[in-house]
Image (cartoon, rainbow, N blue to C red; front, side, top):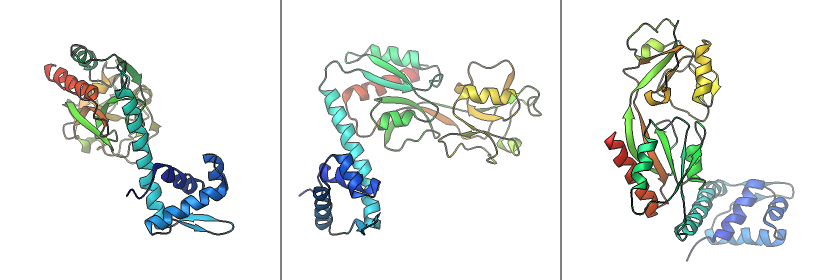
Length: 285
């Protein structure tokens, strides 16, 4: 027998997020006594106390905190599954691809052409995301597939296939002390001010944490031009090159990979077909 129904899990998550039965009941559009009884039934069935209740305060027990964390994931999975089922039953379903402007390593045209040549191809709608939110588009169902950069984009909950792997380059002002070098190593950049990418916790380059937070490459280019920062980027993200900047290979920087990614819960043939077409097109390049 199932320990929890989706409805009961929804009730618990609402109470756990609000930490107030009255507000949770209002949010759920049910009576507060009915909500209280439902939560007690859940506790009885699971055999653990989820909430500590007083006349003035509601708090989570360790068991309650664990159920909230995993319960949110479970409800997200149910919503994604429902959307996938509806789309799978619609013969007119379009495939939604999210990319970062300029973040396709010049592969997008070839990928779209390869996919269009398949007998099961659907129309592809292109969505444009920011520097770090494209994976979220796939996780929450706004997009079916994404082009992402590993290891910088968070691939949690996603399946992926690699399209290409590339080295990284330092982006410097022309008058920078390292601009005359043919190539650099990470040690050469020690002490330089590097940017902090919003939503990215690991970049694989030295970082003293003093640089400004940035959200996209155009913003970064402006900061490099005025001498505020230097940067290390995947080679494809710096094309076309800017005439006021220089680009030098960083020989020992960890490489980055452009991947096509989709939800691990999404096993629809149209998604697999697009991924196959993307890999085939990348190999031809």
